[in-house]
Image (tube, rainbow, N blue to C red):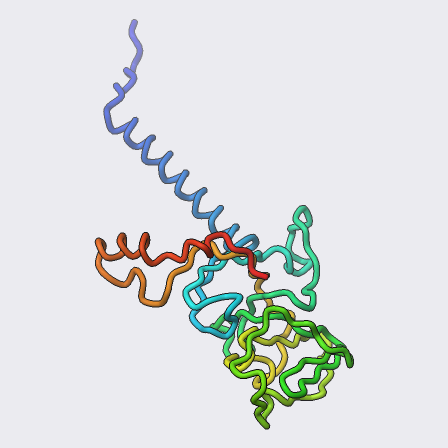
Length: 224
């Protein structure tokens, strides 16, 4: 006596569904991995202002190391981590508008005393040797806080940040210190750079601009 039911023959829909499921699983894994990398490891940023020139130019695309300064509660103990140090170039949420990201140099740490006299920065009474700093006119001193500032003591849990393009930077001289909790990561390197307006044309123009307007000498340039 034969079986009461017969196995249903496979159709083309079955392997098609299986392939779709595999593709969806692969996409889901890729999305989760990308979110993990972006949240905890590295993130890309484009620089829109000249506040860090000549170290970082308008149109530089940066890779930012997010795990180096990660808070201890983040489970990344297998990666190197340390606090922000004076001299680090870092990305942070602007204290007055956390939706905006700024990139500056950490000049002073919690407890340090900062003073600026005739454009020269002093931390704890010692003059800083600032190799990357640029001034529009190093002999022209403004009476305002741009060139004359402090002294102030950096509060606990805060950082004092300045732009390298010192005469054209909106920084801690004007809006105060940066909460360490606002720090997003250390600027690591320039992965691509082009002048403003490049790649704004149509497809053919974008392809041409990529080859003719890319600042190739800045590719993979470490942020100092």
